[in-house]
Length: 446
Image (cartoon, rainbow, N blue to C red; front, top):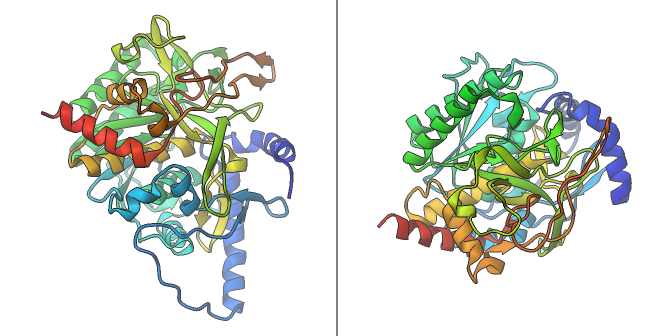
């Protein structure tokens, strides 16, 4: 097996390709090519004996090898993720996200060699890991897609991670135009349209894996996004968004800043960690801040938004909004396996992985509460300030988000005890956090 440093060297070498698009066409191409091989292999092999699928909890499989051919990474299975983040006990008790809808924006694609069929990908994922069939809907009102089920790697990642952690939830992929990430104006239109779609559908949670540095947006665009987020809060929809993948700088390089929509105080901003858990049982051992030299958990302080009241009194936060609020695994060398058609496995990567994980946790909390909790940041911070903090969260205290860029090293921030601008309050221990969030929601709903 390669060492962590060898893996980082490989991934750094690949990053110019991986990040030529936010949506990872290289990994999709690997998956598409390997899928054809998988079909040929399956056709020549004798049929496998039938294996009953488990109702809600993914089986704890043997260690998984995933990644590029001849350079495999040991990934976690969904079952191991469920254990590591405290979701498994909730699933066994019937809290699966049932009755809740998680909305995710996804780029509308046309058929081609770099794309797959999301229905087949999810079916392969569920079969591989003993999960129930996914409840998938695709909304095309924003993009008018003629091929709604054509999926890139980002869509596979978003949907499979939510399904792994909240297998009873409905997955709604809201397709946005392929140009949605081309400019701040396009990005704004996609986010505001997404929120309107979620409101119209009565969704519980919106999960946004995209981000763009604050300085790219005009005041009118910032205001437009904030108005849409206020509409979501008014309709009791939780909006979860990625803090970004480039540490202390914006997604497209310097300057040092945080990114929208995670920096808006109405959003639960999600950073990244590197998970250390048992590859046999999933037992949680620890986490550190995700930093792969050129990629890292994004975080810092907004220059657009003043400090919200729920961040009052937190050491290190000054007059402006601190980001992120929370975090979870984002390191491709410690990742959950994603499954493509034919059973091809690749590692998840970035805060595009940690964000849907938190969206799934919120769907579990909504089911537990019997209502949509909506804007949860004040409740998250109350729990973190209480004696329950170290039960409900894994406090991530090591690592930083300094990044190496072609123009030099940009110094970021250090993780530490309690909240920090790298991993927020840390990652969830859902078996304790979900009931606490549900209780907070019941109080606020009185």
